[in-house]
Image (cartoon, rainbow, N blue to C red; front, side, top):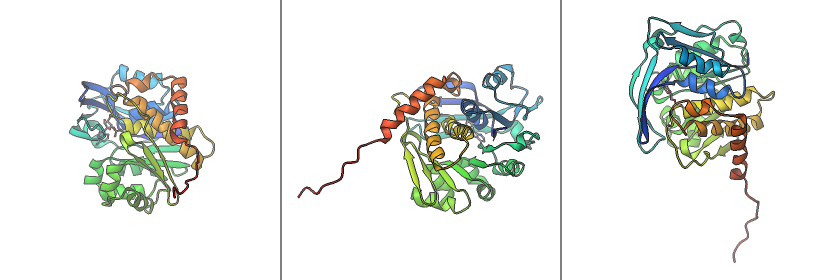
Length: 309
Ligand code: AMP
């Protein structure tokens, strides 16, 4: 087993200034696994209700995502999230969250899932994330994502989970909220002092940074003229980042830097259409083309500065 993800599988209702969608497949586990499936074998641990039908299952099947550990509660309803974005697409406004079957979820990992080399603890309640982490003690790299809700209501549990992961993936506002430190670099170093060896700070349309205790690497977001729906961009980024790492033998700093670009590439496709629509029908050529487009964005000639007078 290569890459394991635990997260939410949801039906999302989303409104942006450019359109509205009443019911689409979403959730951290869905966005992540579809994105990562372009790079590696992915196994999804999550729970769904009786309203999760063959059409939704087909999306996972079409991407070769292993759903043996996707629990089905036929008499329950799938998790639902309703959100809205204003013109500042970096900020999601949660209008309603219905936990439904997630309220009693106890993640159970099959024996093969416990052998996963990489693990992504997607956005769900932090105690559940830690339960999964404890069932995969030999994983080579475990990454974690979260959201403002868990920082608000389960901060201590979240900190205990942060202590047992290798990489934390977080957005800038959450890093500030979690630490109470306004300066992003200081906030990042604070989180690193709790345990992770690397922090990925997502900054929406401004790109993302990889911070360790002694290095800093930043990339821009792919410059798009039209952004339609940012829902799931963070999870899609994480899917590209972790999926690419899972395809590599060495998980060193150089691999992490390339993974940052693949994360950004996948997220840039995600925002072009509603939900998972665009990422579902990508081709490897499209992914490679966008990866190559990052090179000139990061390059400039080294011309030494000379004093004018
Ligand atoms: P992102 O835009 O990548 O931060 O994630 C958006 C996804 O997170 C949506 O598809 C939602 O279904 C999902 N989501 C929203 N709130 C929660 C929550 N409390 N727990 C788990 N997933 C959630």
